[in-house]
Image 1: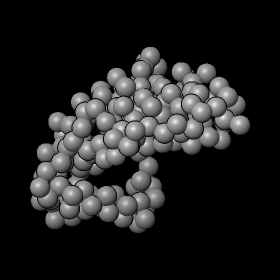
Image 2 (image 1 turned 90 degrees about the horizontal axis):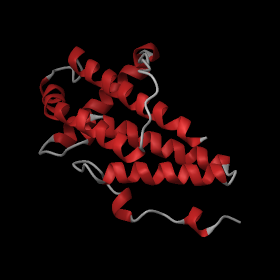
Image 3 (image 1 turned 135 degrees about the horizontal axis):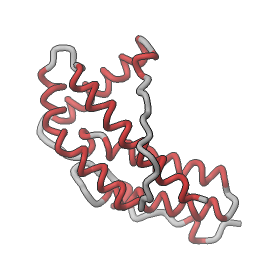
Length: 166
């Protein structure tokens, strides 16, 4: 039977929407990272894998400029952006493949690493929202470049945290 600490859930405020917040997302990343560690140490590998997946998803979201702020009309732009990305993947799966460039191991702490992702993503928020709203296609070379770089940044953050799970 799992110890009570393994069954605890974070406060709802930490799991709710983290758009527009420099605090909630990184707090949730830290929570899921610690949960992954505890589960892994207790040999609950399947549950640890799930917790790691949730943490990785949160890191990817925090690296995405559309998830770092809120503005009037942004929700429609976000839906349009995500549908265009999905359509590119369905039309040609090779268009969905972004090459991962590992920048080398950096010792990382989950909360600080997540905040750094948000800090790098947030300045691109307005540009991305405008580009999606005003581009007739909803997806252009600049949007593609932002998406590719932000996904790579998130992948590097995840790669830097994984060795700490040992």
